[in-house]
Length: 143
Image (cartoon, rainbow, N blue to C red):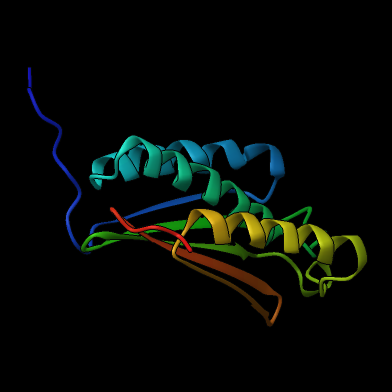
């Protein structure tokens, strides 16, 4: 039996792909918890990342009416930083719309939550796909 857990190192990458459904975001949170623990994040940072990735997935789905397609989550260890990219893939262009009304308000709330939990984040959409990303450093503090 091993006494220690092998840590992930710089440039190690984990990918998760699952159907673009809000009820499956729990999978992204679970994988993020495991990856951030293996990347050396402490329990508070791990919890921040778990919550942030849930919001990141929701932000990626926001403004879409995706009943098809996949969410692709990519977590990459970048030294003391964990980078996470969430992409809505294989959704038809008609399913991805701009953020308006209530959708824009919900997206702003997700962005405020991300502001509190991570060091950097962003979102863009083009050509029928939506991509949101975040970065959080070990020992760093979100502003």
